[in-house]
Structures are given as structure tokens and as C-alpha cells.
Length: 341
Image (cartoon, rainbow, N blue to C red; front, side, top):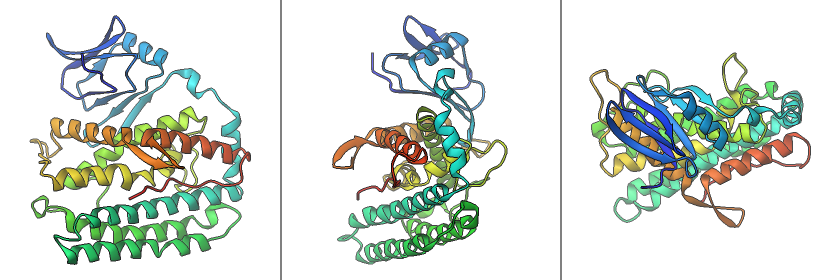
């Protein structure tokens, strides 16, 4: 039996049950998958018409396995964790108080810096493979990376005693850097995809839909490390507060979007993966499964970090714990993850 670390269930009519230390996925009389609980790290339920038993949920809770529910567009709809994981208080108190002082300002600045640095890193990464075959494109991508990084000094120059005073300016800088980044990446998107530029909500083109779905998969992993670190997923700094809005998850995900999802989806389309749509204009179920599998593969892949080789999932966990320690005042600095190209 193949070891399954990430169980993805998106076949209409599927049922996830528990049997003798395994999660078993069936559809009618057909067995689709078996995943031993001892090896399982995540369960992803995608779309409508998928159900799971309480026995399976309780088994996941016992083994510390999160269960995520996404819609077909990749929007997170629900997450299931063992109740013991969300019982910490000390870190959350410190996190909420940090919003009103310089700690919140520093976290917002560092996460924004991490995002634009990783955008520049991805541009350099894709450029190096085109130096010989397309020198003009190589120079264009390198120049775009430099232009993105030119926004660093603007972010570092922002000073305030409370994050509300700099948020609008910070998001404006981040937005200008993103325009340069996406315009450059657009040079690599196959013309057949008719990419209109970056769109988030209500995107109808395959490339944007694939990005959005990948971000939804990544969202679950970021939310998980927040919970494990004792952080409140809804108490952010860079993103504004709103009922039901997981602002801290949206903060922490920013540096990882380019390194995990953008790189993965771009590699898929440049290597010929077809982003097929169904009759309703959504990504087909098999395409969504492939995107989720590739994102999980990327998260499990080793990357340089503090002189070691660690999986990006491990780096995410360390970053969340480091943020918690910083917010509690137990260390003086917080730095966002920056990928190596």
C-alpha cells in the first residue's frame, strides 16, 4: 500500500470513513483510496458531494491531522482541528496587545518585505533558465526583479508606533511591486491561456483560477502552523480586521505565495499541463487534484534555511513559532522567510 501523506478527496459522491487504523475513501461500491493514519498529515475535502464520518473526524483529531474543506474555486470554507490545539492563551494575549505597539508595525513590515523579496527571487529563478535560449527575456526578468526590490527602502523607511498608521502606505508599496512582478511573470504564461493579468476574486481564466486554488491549499497549511504555535488566525497586522477574516493567516501566507504556489503553477503551465475547465467554467476536478498534489510536493521539498536543508512545511512551522516568541517579547527581532534561488 502506497504511503499517503496528504489525502485529497474531490470525487462527487465520495465518503471518507475509518477502518482499522486507516481512512478509507469510497464512492458507491468502489474503493478509491486507503490512507494509514500513522502516515497521514492532512485531509483535503474539495467541492460538493463529499462526506466524512464522525469516526474519521475523531481519528484525525486523535492523530493531530487537520481536515480542510475548500470549494471548487479554492476558497477555504472550514477547518477541523483537535480542540486541545487551540487551548493556549499566553501567546494570543501578547499577539492582540502587539497590534497597538511597535511589534505589530515590525511584523507587518517584515512580512511585506518577505513577499517582495520572494517575488524578486522567483523572477531571478525563472530568468536563469532562459539566459541562453532567450537573452532578451532573461534581461527583462532580471530588470523586473531589480525593480521589485527597489521598493525595499520604501518599506524600511516606514516608521510608526502603531500599524494602523502605516498600513495604507505599506499596502500601496506592496501593490506597486506586485504590478511589476505580475507583468514580468505574464511574459512566461502561454498565450493559449489568454491570461488577462492577475485577478483574485471571480477570476474566470484558467491561470488565475489555478493560482487561486493553489493559494487555498497553502492557506490550510499556514492556518495549521498558526494554531500549533498558539497564535490567533484572526488577529493580523498587515491585513485589516473584519468579522470572519483570518487576518493573520493572510499575513503569514504572503511570503510563501511566490515560493510555493506561483512557482508551482507556472512550472505546470510552462511544462504543458492543461488547465481544463468543466461545463460550469470551473477547473476540472482532476486539474484541481493535480494542483493540490503539486503544492503539497513543493511544501514537502527541502529548501535552505539557517544553514540547514528543511522542508518548506518545517520552515513554515519554525516561522510561526518564531513569530509567537517575538510577540511574547522573548526575542528582539522577527524576519520573514526569504527563498534561495
